[in-house]
Image 1 (cartoon, rainbow, N blue to C red):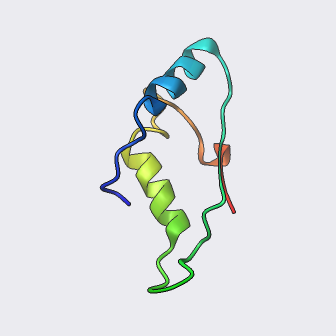
Image 2 (cartoon, rainbow, N blue to C red):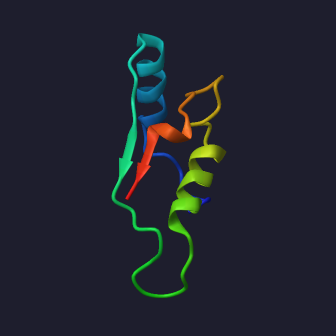
Image 3 (cartoon, helix red, strand yellow):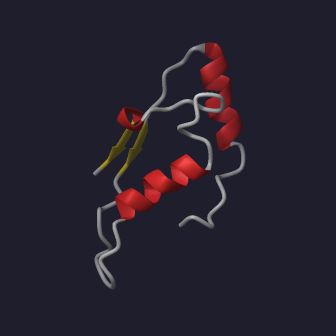
Length: 71
């Protein structure tokens, strides 16, 4: 997951929301572990990916972990 790139335009969308003062959240249906295979923690991987791509950086997008809902 760490090698995946953000969908084209998504960073610009979040930045535009931040500039406009619009609060956003990320909601995902991603399960914690894969249905088949090794029991990797997909929630931890998703949060790490968001961290690596600047989503939690206050100088970039500035989301908090409380803005991310993984089910």
